[in-house]
Image (cartoon, rainbow, N blue to C red):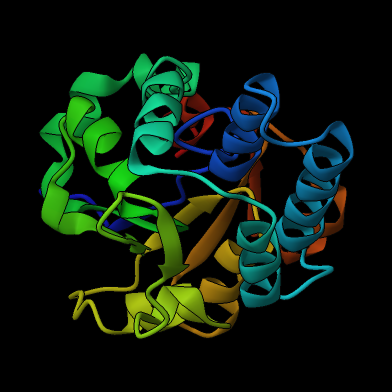
Length: 219
């Protein structure tokens, strides 16, 4: 019997942190970003995830604060690979066993997500995220805005195009995850609170789960 399709968020869900916040902290430690700018970055992330600021606005505003290279992003990816959310890491075998029916849909970045997801046994062709554009010197230039995830309702649009045989379940920590359910492209939104608790999303959730265990063993 196959699993009901499952949509997972990445930042603050599959891993414990937000990619851009980790990148900002790394650049600050390198003396390449001020403390004040790092705090602004974190505030924009919090507002976007809570739904107080549109995702596309927050993405562009945060990226505009940063100057980084592919090498910087690789360092951050290595850091996040060591910060996989404990309850997901504990069920790595389950994830790999059910990879056919699991999708990652994230406003994060493909270059970061792919190696971590494949480490967990998830399928690289089931990962949907933003693509970063770098110049010939490996310096970040822009995010590819031809992709739906760079825009409003991006996650809902991606899920609507997956052609799934039944409505999926969504596990995530942010407002953009709730939007999938609210747009009618998921049967339920599970608000994931193991890493961060966004109280203003409680009313938008079908269920609140404090860990992946709570999802696996609640039904």
